[in-house]
Every structure is written in C-alpha cells, then in structure tokens.
Image 1: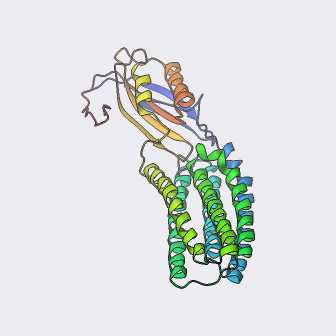
Image 2 (image 1 turned 120 degrees about the vertical axis):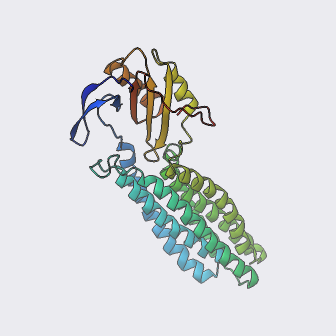
Image 3 (image 1 turned 45 degrees about the vertical axis):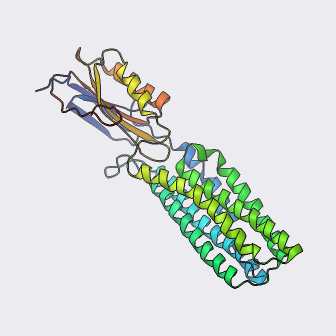
Amino acid sequence: MSTHQHEEHDHQHAHGEAHDHRGHGHDHGHGSGGHHHHHAPQAGQGRTFALAVGLNVLIVIVQGIYGFLAHSTALLADAGHNLSDVLGLLLAWGAVWLGTRQPNARYTFGLGSSSILASLANAALLLFACGAIVLEAIQRLINPAPVAGLDVFIVATLGLIVNGFSAWLFMRGSKEDLNVRGAFLHMAADAAISAAVAVSGLVIMFTGWSWLDPLMSLIVVSVIVVGTWGLGRDAMRLAMAAVPPSVDMTRIETYLTQLPGVRNVHDLHVWALSTTENALTVHLVMPQGHPGDAFVQGVVTTLRSEYSMHHATVQVELGGACHACVLSERGHVH
C-alpha cells in the first residue's frame, strides 16, 4: 500500500461553487488559484463574425443573381461556396459563444470543446461545397454555354474584395485558434475563388473561351481541398483527445522531471479543452514527501505561462506503491 500525503484544501471555482478535496494525494492548480477560463478574446471575436456573416450574405445574393443572368458556372459556384461560408461562420460564431458559457455540474470544463466540433464541421462543409462545385463544373465542360465575361469580372472582383477583407479580419486569431482558422480558411478560399473567377471573366471578354470558366473552378477547388484537409485532420485529432500540435510534450516532461525532489514522472496526459485551451494531468513521485501547496502552485503557474496548460492537475506521490509502469513508444512512463 502506498503512502500518500493527505492534504485538506479548498478550491473556489470562478463560477461560484466551492468544493473540498479530502484525502486525495493530488493538488489541483489553476492559474494563480481557482479556475480561470479566459474567454475575453473569443468573446471579442463576436463583432468580427457578425461583420463577416453580413458581408457574405450580401455577396451570395449578388453573385447568385448575376451568375444566373451571366450563365457563369464559376460565379454560381462561388455563390454556393459563399453560402457554405455563411453556414461555416455561423457554426464557428456559435462555438465562440458557447465557449463563453460558465462550467456547470454537467459540463465541468464548460462548452469550449464545441469549437473543436465546429472546426470539424467546417472542414466537412468545405469539402462538401467543393464536391458540388466540381460536379457543376464538369457538367458545364461537357455542355458549354456562353458566358458574359464583363459581368463575371465585375461581380467576382466585388467578391474578392469582400472575402479578402473578411479573411483579413480573421487572420490574427487564425494562428492560435483552430476554430478561427476554419473561418479564415473559408474566407481565404473564397477570395482565391473570386480572384480566379475574375481572371477567367477578363479572359473570356477578349477571347470568348467559355470553357475557361468551369476549368478555373476545378483548379481553385483542388487548392481549397489541400488546405481543408489540414484543417480537418487537426480538428479530428483534437476531437480524439490528441496532444495539440502547438504543445511540446518533451519540453513539459523535461521540466517536470528536473523539478527538485522529483524522482519520477508518470501518467502525463495532455489534451485540448477547446481550440484555445489545453488541460494536463500528471503524477510526480517525490520520496521526500509532499513539498507543500506553494510548490505545486508554482508548478501549475509555470505550466500555464510557459507551456500553455490552462487547466493543470498535479498529483504528488511518495513512491511507495508498485505502479504498473509501461514505457510507451514515445518514451513516456505511464
């Protein structure tokens, strides 16, 4: 039987509920005390999403009408893709709002993981839209129709401006938040499509090559699929509780192993709570005894500030128990 350092300690949650942990050989540390969920950055994205949604609804209407009048497959495809963007943006926006909800008795981590689901849905939506564009483009290649090049060029240029501006709005947040990255990819992909359609409209004006319109759609779709595949892969990994790509497990394990008094580290697990927040649990074997709450709190604070672990649970053990340790392929002891 192992000997554990039993501490009686209270943690006051940010949502107002206090609870006691008695007789546990572990300490929960969150930031500088209590649970801190930083939702302000996500909440600040609300205006950006509202503006992007409004602009894209407008461009869908304009492109749909003129695509029909100009007999342009590429323009209609761009309108359809913009419509999928509106749905994708609404998904991402909804995930941002859900992420601001406070934890409760059923969802103790809050609803931040909805942003991971939104990213996954966005990737699926993009691929579905690309499939629809390919189908329509192939049909137009088989049965070509005259295309009003000037109308295509003007409307596509307008779409390029709107989508380029929308992509710029999401550019900053796309590096840290996979959910915002999904929105950014939607906007950037549509800007690319609009640019290609505008070029094809310009060429058709001077050459009359109507077949260039659907061909350009196929070329742009192939580029979009490459970017979307990466988004879907990353979202799927987070949904499967994989270590987030921005986290260096080797650095974390090295830091914990080199802490004074720590003989061994095992059961080190890291996963994503949302597209912006990570969680960690770990067991530290310290034969000299429990180092005190200040030590554990210092470890948690460092994990948050240096390693992006927003919710860390550290369990201290004396090492008296015979743990069934299995060496994983990555060299971590569990």
